[in-house]
Amino acid sequence: MNGTLYLVATPIGNLDEITLRALDTLKTADLILCEDTAHSARLLNHYGIKADKQSYHKFNEASRAASVIEALRAGKNIALISDAGMPCVSDPGARLVEECRGAGIPVTVISGASAVINAYALSGFSGGFTFLGFLPEKAPAKKKLLDAYKNLPSALIFYCAPHDIAATLDFLYKELSARAAVVCRELTKLHEEIIRYTLGDEITWNVKGEFVIVVKGADEADNPLLSLTPEEHLKSVISSGLSVKDAVKKVAADRGADKNSIYQLTVKK
Image (cartoon, rainbow, N blue to C red):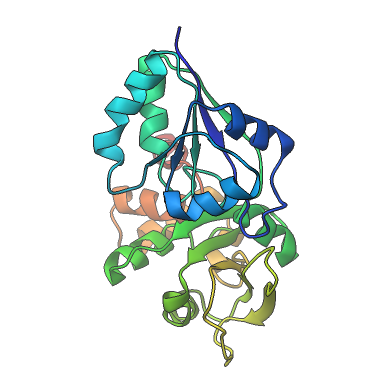
């Protein structure tokens, strides 16, 4: 009988922010896969958890997945944790989940802290959000990603490493103009800092710790075409000189819509 893979959320800062169910799962697991075993040892030792540990990170997940699947097939219950928060969310794990699904091995999730949810709640913005994780390193890929989401009415949420915070905020200002934003640093930790400001403002950053950036979604002033009906929007974009194929892509991206639904408007015409 197969074992189960448990995706266990761990604290994003304050070690007390872990559920009883998460602790029970970690204590009874036959093996705990850790993004960084040394980092996770602090949490596990704090709660007296003695289960075997094994590293599982982006550099070895391809080679390690087979042995993990084999252990699960042998009936072992395995917990997967990242350095902080929920595995598979800008952290390793998605590949293993996919392989478990393909092998018919049960996968379940143990709820817990999430920097994305915490930051959105603290932002005070409404209308939902789109989580984009860490932006790509190369400028063309970074711009291409943002172009696909910049006109959405939902807030945009990004993770950012401390050494990238100044450059990332400058990039967001150039691409999104002076939108309201909230920058969260060291969430749930002793030196938690929540800064509300407008992109482009001068500000001095304490660059220690991890950052979550929440940028307010677009409104009609950012893209006047959003005030049009989808049909009118598409007609306007096509009249600007784009091919039908490219116009469909642009309108879908601008409106956060499915490309097929926009394409159907051309069929109707």
